[in-house]
Length: 113
Image 1 (spheres, rainbow, N blue to C red):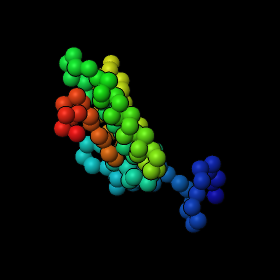
Image 2 (cartoon, rainbow, N blue to C red; image 1 turned 90 degrees about the vertical axis):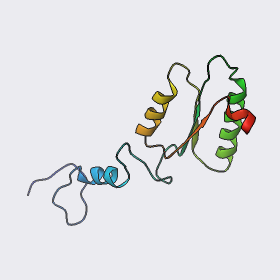
Image 3 (cartoon, helix red, strand yellow; image 1 turned 60 degrees about the vertical axis):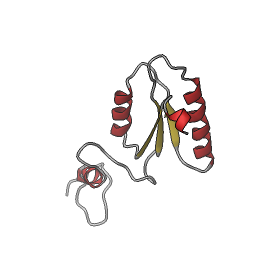
C-alpha cells in the first residue's frame, strides 16, 4: 500500500484535487466564482465610481460611513478607493476573488440618496 502525505478521509486510499474543483463548480456561474456569504472572506465590497472632475470627498464620506455601519453589525466589508484603475477593472478584480455582493457609489448617487 502506498502512503500519501495528503490528508485522507475515512475509507479513502488517496485524495485528489477533485474536491476543490467541485466547490468551484457548485458555487460558480458562467462568469465567476460566487462564494456563499458564510464562506466569503469579504462579503461586501464598496466601490467608488469616479465621474470626470467632480469632487469625490462626498462619496468617500458616504462609503466610509456605510463600511463602518456594516462592520458594526458583523458584515465583512471592504472599500475600494483606488483611482489608478477603472471601475470595470475593479469589478472584475473583486468578482474573481468571489465577493458575493458589490455596491457601487458615485457622485450622481449622492443627490438621489
